[in-house]
Length: 140
Image (cartoon, rainbow, N blue to C red; front, side):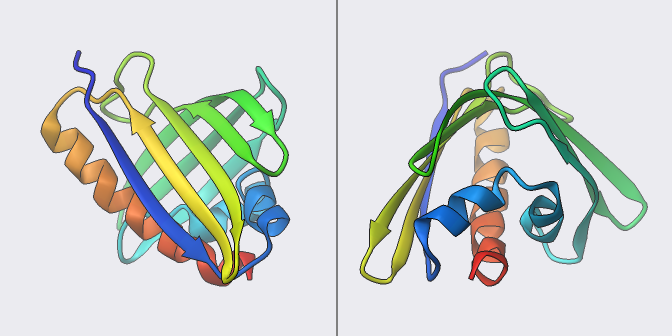
């Protein structure tokens, strides 16, 4: 286990509330939680409360990639913290999202803590960058 972390920032041309709410809505998650080209999300469910969980299944071709998480903090419309477990889980892996209004919309800062390897961290950085870019047309 390592203490590797990564941070990605992206400005979305949409109001802070819309961008924040997209992360709690399973219909919205299905539309933007795509970390790579030609990926889909056939399944998403949420129970958006502290201690509640959410689960998504990403799909690439015939390969399904399940993920599950627990909400640790929900501060509308400023901050969201959840665990993150997938095919190569790191114990206590956490994602923290902050949402800040800016002149052009909402600045999202995503920090993902605890990876099993540098390769896992680097792959997640690519995936989270794609997910944040996919969120823009969904939240707008």
